[in-house]
Length: 269
Image (cartoon, rainbow, N blue to C red; front, top):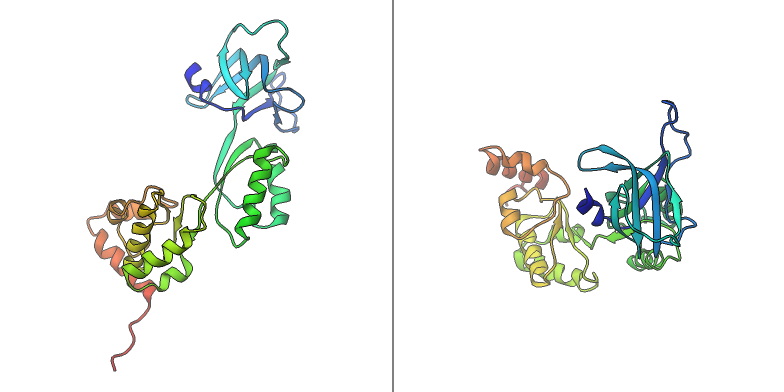
């Protein structure tokens, strides 16, 4: 338990628990950091939710130093002059993740989504690529990181290597186009689309490997899961190709799906 909580950063939320067997008031969770310095803080008499077991560990003391949890237990030394927050009757949980968010797709969505994430207990998100100019997304990320804008921690997914790349007919074309797209990616993890032709995908994978970046996204319809793994893809957005990989007819099924998406062949002559 102690090791688990030591690894958690300061994305903690205090939520009111049920009183006398009645449902909790709909006030929602409150960030611990509101009004309290996180350079050193002790939370006392709080009920901990252990996410590894879903058990409640009651009447605990938590010490936060420099934004990190450094100690958890029934009693831990902290010093008398340390600011204390009485957590009696409240529940302490680690901040939650949204691994596939579109909070920054527009400026209007951003204004609503960022504070709403915090109010809902989500303290970290992975933002997917969108049509919004990358500079605007990066600027928002910098504002959140600096503390100038309230919001969850932002992990920005890299460029989506799809769209025009779907017309790349050879491995060399796919690699050249992907290399050009990666030049302005800022070292973020690129994502591949589901409709890339097989040769274009292999060229993209080679370009990403040459840039020493991890490759994520969909497994294109034109390749098997084993081929994607062999090409160096380490992140997967959907698991439908995993189901196909469980079939002894995976290669035939993948070929049939790819042919269907490609459409009918033009008539000869």
